[in-house]
Length: 513
Image (tube, rainbow, N blue to C red):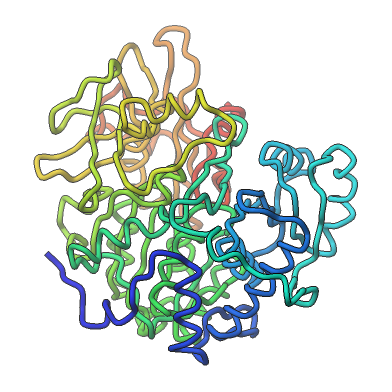
């Protein structure tokens, strides 16, 4: 068991974001809290600025529980607004800036956003939507402190761990996005569990410089930011991921920690100059969002030379419910293919189609019980009741537990391919195909088959130096995978379609089939 170092308890663990901000402003006022594109905010400046932003929101009629939208790039303004909402009990609704106007309108309407913060270049499009959105009273540009209205008091009783803090919209890979409502306490629930048991799985320190490259409209980045903020660390906002730029930030920017998805790690390691020297200051990488090929993980451990921790969770569990800690990242260990084990105080159960628990080693749906669970889906009581039936969150993921309680994820239940009555898990096929030296990435989906119901189709991204043939791949799989699991069709593509969190958009692949 790994224990926290002496620095882990150096910052008092306040239960609210507001109290934490005030504490840091007093004890480390001149330390950099947020850095973005050369701009820096100290903890004192961030505290004062978010106070000003909170006063602006109050003056514009935002009351506790009101929804405040953010439609812009990831910058220090996002984190300023997050803290301001926490201070007054408003609910922040981050919106993917890549969405079409129709999709933006859906989120604004569904969330009942009362005030929207956006970029000047987006205002014309937003203004065109306002006639159809009478609830959207105010649209403001980034940089709210320039409009600050000192003298508007911030109520002391509106914020707290039990109040909703964010409303995150699911990626919509399987239908219309739903608003997941998360309380302030959910963001620090896992942090509190780890501290209580003195586990350093995700430990962050006050002297850390944490790089953020994942998009803020997904759950991981605000969750990750708040872990670092609580520790008194510096958050470096990378404004998205680009291989060469991210490598330069890690190499030259004093970065000690970061969080990425596996596809980003592969791109990073393929960059020229991505040798051990480029990562010498890096202490820990947290990864998740999709399964990681074992070959890639071994390469990361070898080249990057730092600690790795995998997290598994959903938006509905506030990013993380299970962790594969650094101590389990041992080359050659069978646990490298596990998602991890639940945090102390979190329970995992595997159930069959009728909802009955399954023994170790048997695949079924993953159920989670965690103190970080969502309040519910916004304005969707039936969906909430279904997702939380029996006191467990029904994840929709297929997986199994081993005898030691480690969770292994196979796939989304809905992505399982039924071939002549046999379940085929895409992750298993992808993992096996991914071992072929000519395969850079691969995704498989089910396609209609008149004889067997469904068949397996593979979309392969080949490595630049070798274009494999379907015959070559079939031969490779012959001794490694049962016949019914092997793809009957192959398509070679330049890249796999992914959403901003790195998850493969299988429905897009099915549309191509």
